[in-house]
Image (spheres, rainbow, N blue to C red):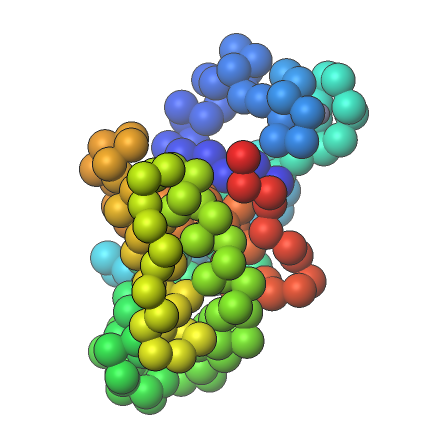
Length: 195
Ligand SMILES: [Zn+2]
């Protein structure tokens, strides 16, 4: 899987021009059909209909899914919504209150928080690696109190380092990108290797 910018037209241009590289081998990706249309509920309100683009590597022949950075794999809500829920939970709010604030079903929000909690240690380790890869001068990240707080703290450091390196970007989109779209997938889909 490859996470790409949310602008589908630009991604299409880059794909057609051979400017997208295969994550495992660096080979040139070529267009290889589309996934199904799906709905993505937006934090700002309303919903988008999007279709993931598939591509195949010329060198290793592996097919890749081009997932937009506004979304996470197998989640109906955009990363801004899910990120807001995770932040609110980190600030001590429970899933019912967060669900009411975001206008989402309680079960859905509870599912995000549970997935984040059970994957917290792997999330912390992955984003800590990213933080140090992006900012080699960064010292150890101090413990924040519990596994969820530690994971959020590592995410904060990694996004801060990415913004310093690449310029301002919406932080939760960076999180989606750095996670390879599998932030909440846990063991079913491991994180992509950090370069
Ligand atoms: Zn390849």
